[in-house]
Amino acid sequence: MLNYERYKQAPVMNYPERQWPGKKIQKAPIWCSVDLRDGNQALIEPMVVEEKIEMFQLLVKLGFKEIEVGFPAASQIEFDFIRQLVERKMIPDDVVVQVLVQCREHLIKRSIEALRGVKKAIVHIYNSTSTLQRDVVFNKDMDEIKAIAVQGAQWAKQYTSDFDGEVMFEYTPESFTGTELEYALDICNEVQEIWGATPDKKIIINLPSTVEMTTPNVYADQIEWMNQRLKNRESIILSIHPHNDRGTGVAAAELAILAGADRVEGTLFGNGERTGNLDILTVAYNLFSQGIDPELHLENIREISDVYERCTKMEIAPRHPYAGKLVFTAFSGSHQDAINKGTKAMRDRKNTFWEVPYLPIDPSDIGRQYEPVVRINSQSGKGGVAFVMDTFYGFKLPKGMHKEFADVIQAISEKQGEVAPEQILNEFNSNYTDRKEPIHFLKAQITEAEDDVEFSTFAKVRYMDHGVEKVFEGVGNGPIDAVQKGLEKELDIEIRVLDYSEHALASGSGAKAASYIHLLDVRTGKTTYGVGISSNITRASIRGIFSALNRLLY
Image (cartoon, rainbow, N blue to C red):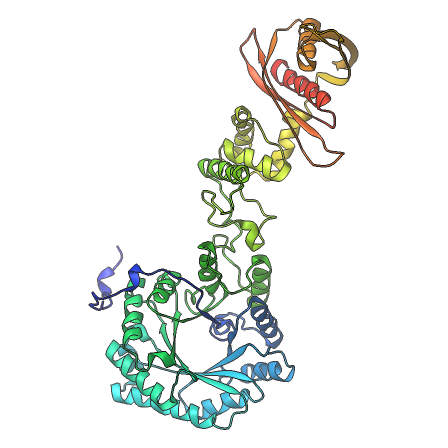
C-alpha cells in the first residue's frame, strides 16, 4: 500500500473575493520561449551551438518576440551561442533576447558582457524565496533572502547603465508557489522600486510555479492576489512560468491568465526539468480552438515537431495534444461514426464554423491533412471503415453496405490488430470490384426501343462463365432491369435489385463512376452488395450486378 501518510497537503489561501472564475480569455498573452535555457538544461544531451541556432531560427519563424537564449554565465557554450547570434546578425530587430542569471555580481557582469551588440535585451535575475529553500538550502531568514534580491537588482541596474541597446529587467522569486504571499509581494515591490519602473519603461515580475504543489485554482488565486496588490501595477508586465509536476501546467497557465497574467514563459511540447515546463504550443492551440488568434505561426505542426525532435533528441508522445501521431485518430466505432457524420454534415450544410464530434479542430489547419483521421482496429465499427473509404479513396458506400464491409475488416483486425487504409482498399477491391469469378462481364450492347412501351430496353451481354465465353439477352424497363432479367433466364436464378446508387470517383473528363448494387437471392433470402467501376455509368452498373452475383451465388 502506498505510504501516503508521508505527505501533507500544501497550504491553500483563503481568498473568497477571487474574480478569475467568471472571466474568459480574450486574447493571447505575451509569449516567451525558454527552450534554449530551461528546456536545454533538462536534455540528456544538451544542444550544441548549431542545434541551438536551428532552434532559435524555428522560434523566430513561429513568431516568438521574446526568447530566453541562455544562461551565459553558466558555461562557455552558453556564452558563445549568444555571441554567435550577435556576430552573425541573426537576431531580428523585433525580437528581444533574454538571459537568465542568479543575483550574484560576477555572474551578472558576465551575462551583460554576452549581450554586447544586442539591440533589445531582457536581463532576468532570480533567487529562491520559498519557506523550504530558505530553511534547507540557504539557511537564511527572510531579510537575508530579500537582501539577495535587492542587491541583484542594484547590480543589474549598475552594469547596464552604459549598455548600448534597450534593456528591460525581469525579476523572479523562484519557488513562488512555496513562498508566503505577503513576503513575495514585499520583495517584488522592493525590486521594482530599485529599477524605477514606469508605464513607459516597464519591468517584468515573473511568478513561477517552479514546482507544482497543488491544484491549478490555487495558483490562479495566488496570481490574482499579487495582481491586485503589486505597487505601480501599470508599470509591470505580470509574467508566469508554470511547471508540470502534477500534469496540470496548461490548466495552471490558463487560469493564471484569467487571474491577470500578461505574459507566459514556457517551451515547445513542455520540455524541461522533471515532468517539464508549460507546453506553450498546447496553450496556443487551445486559444486557436476557441477562435482566438494565438499570435504565433503554428500552421505546420509537423515541421515544428521535426525540428524539435532533431535538436532535442526527444520524442513527442503519440498522445501529446495536437502534435502526437494519434491525437487526430479514432479507433472506437462510435467515434468513427460520429466523425463520419459530422464531416458530412459540415460539407452538406456548408458550415463556416468547424463542428465535428471528437475533433476540436480541423487537423488540416495545423498541417495534419495527410495523416489518417480514423484508424481501424478490432474496436472500430462500420462508420470508421466507411469514413476511410470516403476520405482516402472517394468511395461513398451506401449506408446498408457499411456493416457488410466492416465485418470483413473486423475479421482481419481481430487476427492482426490495426488495419491500414491501404489494406482496407485492397480488401474492398478483392471482395467487390475485382470479384470476377466464376462469371465475368466483358461488354454489353444496350438498345433503347423507339416506341414508348413498358419494356423498352434491350441488352445483349457478353461474359465469361467458368472460363467459357457466352452471350445472353434480356429486355427490361432500363439497362439494369434488362440485364437482371437476362441473367435470371441465362443462369436459372431468381434475383431482385433492392437498391442502386452511383457517384463519380473523380472530377474531369476522365472521371470514373462507382456503382453499388444491393442484390437479393429470392430463393434463399440472402442479400449482398456488388460494386462496379467504369468511365461509363451503364457499364459500371452491370459490373456491379456481376460483382454482387459472384458474392451471392458462388
